[in-house]
Image (tube, rainbow, N blue to C red; front, side):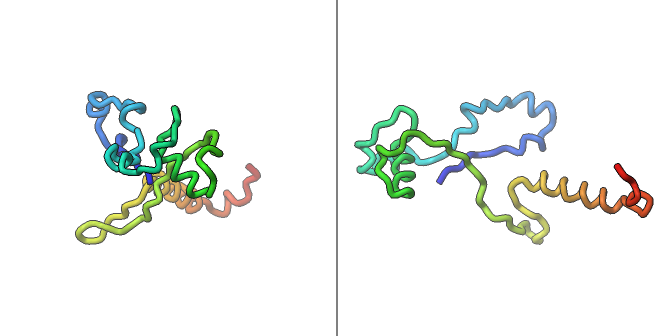
Length: 125
């Protein structure tokens, strides 16, 4: 229900990173609903909160089958739930969240395990 637009900032050059400073307050705000769509929800008009959007409170309350007033506070964590896919014109790319971290870890483990020979297996450390 939420999306945070992201940048592969590590793929930019040093000069490009210096020119664009990410402001976490302004540039990483989750996209939840347009103001017009939120105002069309008539049943959120009675929900008052200084901290959370009334539509978000209503969605959480509906999911939990409780009245909105029973929600005092909550912690919300966002995760990318899109499935990985093979893509590109020749189907040669893997599109997936956190792929750089996963691929790096896999490669390092394969190299480490591949470097072990019989002399290392007798090491006590």
